[in-house]
Length: 363
Image (cartoon, rainbow, N blue to C red):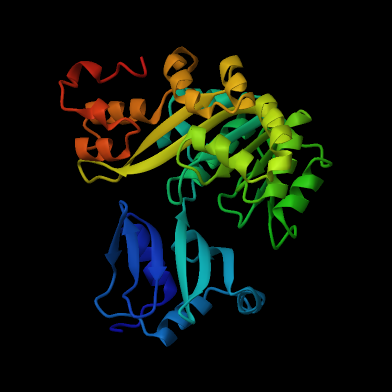
């Protein structure tokens, strides 16, 4: 490989070029994801030894030992003059490779991310379950951080986060914010969540609802009067409900459906789409607020009716992904082809005069 850059130089270059992730892979040049596309940072590929040296320079002895034992590792990294990153180290074809995602220093405000006021309104809830969903790389953690900031700024209480690893670092504000990292402060999400209920929390944040036990305890915590915020890897609101139920064996699903219909308060699903002008990415969202009709659909497992309920619930702040795409298209933020590709109903995006719809969805 030409040059002798260290890992900090590559991380710094990723940030300076507006990238979100740095990828280090064997037999490929270091590459940054910029506005959704992968861009090489060098011409020459990394050898296996160069790739390993760059990655291992970021790890402590205990982290190296854990990687050798588990063959993969999630960790947080603060790099001098580059900032804070979430690292994932893994083996590919017996070689060590890694991805580093940049974590902005400043905790964002929800409006600045592109969310509508309804998401900020959800932060005033006192109990129940609120989900932020989307595939990897769609900004779920950033939205969750914005919600935590809003809650911590506006009311006294105790917020306990359970993360793997800790990403955004929160100061104590009106609320006390206790951030617990899996593998450092607790042995597992499920154990930390079970203990959190005994730590006098007002809000419990689970960075990822990743298994049956964690989901079950989260539902119980929401049922016993806590506000529980969590993320899920699903593309829209209806699929999120199905995923929460389907992770359980059939013998338990009816009980989970009953719990979910009682405690679920809202689902915010999101996607990050390349802007039409090439200047970054635009946020497209779907927001479901759970009212009487939605609860009935969950109880009866008629999830297919939820899209219609979101469409008639716009006065309550709900909107579908197609509503959001139409707004972005009408305001010139995304292309028609992109809107059609991501739409639930592509027919909605047959060419028409969009000028009159520029602000019709949100006003």
